[in-house]
Image (cartoon, rainbow, N blue to C red; front, side, top):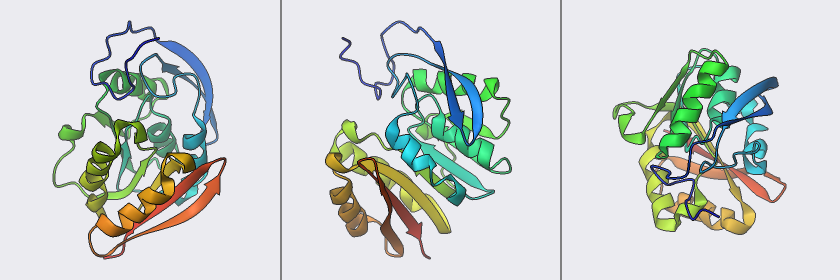
Length: 203
């Protein structure tokens, strides 16, 4: 078994794309996935729980998917909110390639796929959606969240899904303690061993 992680920047395993059937935002779709990305065989359970909140996604503006993998969250957001611009970011080059392919397969025109550093620094987001990469380690995870969540526009919301036994409740407390003044974090759902946290910029 490969020791490579889905958060490796440049996977060394052979790129062998495959097609899977999924349902995204109520649409039947065929997408491409491959090894060395997160959940290559299906929409993972945590992401499925998160996407049950899809009706809370804004209709327009710039919406961010942090850690896009092969694209299930970004693609779902793009289908649900066709007037919004969806930013799908990841450090894994294979994830970015697969998301680009899947954007093209679905004929979506409102998705921008890029590395984190290629997102314009001045951009604020009307929404941030993520199944964050818990297994990168606590310090790296905290750095990712502190990089992006403060970029929520006033009154905008972020939805995050975290497995309970991987520290959802401790992350909830950490977000309440470390996000800027004016931000609030609440739990909006518990389902199938996952928690969905909503972070809001109340300024």
